[in-house]
Amino acid sequence: MSSSLLSALLIEAPVNRHFAQLHRDPQALTEAVTLYLETGLRRGNGVVVIATPSHTERLLASLRHSGLDPSQVLKSGQLELHDAELVLCKFMRNDMPDWDDFRKALSAVFERVRAFGRGTTRAYGEMVNVLWQEGKQEAAIRLEEYWNELARLYPFSLFCSYMLDPNHPHSYDGLEAICRTHSDIIDSVEDLERARRYSEDSLQ
Image 1: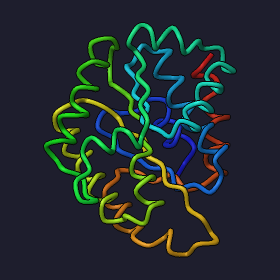
Image 2 (image 1 turned 45 degrees about the horizontal axis):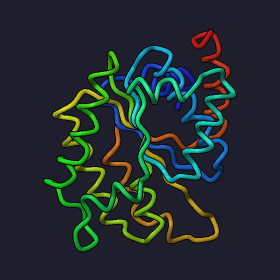
Image 3 (image 1 turned 60 degrees about the horizontal axis):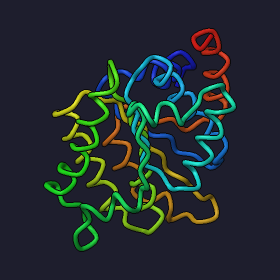
């Protein structure tokens, strides 16, 4: 993926683009997500983060380091933070996501954030990765399909992530199906580095 295209995804976050980063380096993921979130917050976009608590803390620290005050955008309603496992509990039934419960849970979130932000809402989600790491590949794929259905109802961009463990070959099973559910796949640390350099002027 070219640095200009990757920067367009992370910075411009085109409406209804659903992309995923396949990563082996948590820090590289944090840097990419921070760029995506920071740009949206500075532009006044509504932002939704559905991640593990530990990664949410790293993202908040990274945003603070970039000069943003997360407490302000949380208080204003422009930013919402959700625990990935707790949100999963709202719609998982017999180890598979239920569409009606998923739509109900996520629609409420997007309705709130849309009211406090302007432009395209940006969402970052790790629920699929939680399922993937638990060996529930079919559920993760179904959930990606549900995200695509939800995009028909709300104008948002979605950034997903998958942790790939080279020591566990089975973590790569089903990736072809995952790729089919996304508009774009990010899988190169070098591309991310070029994109960060390319985009510096956009954040100044």
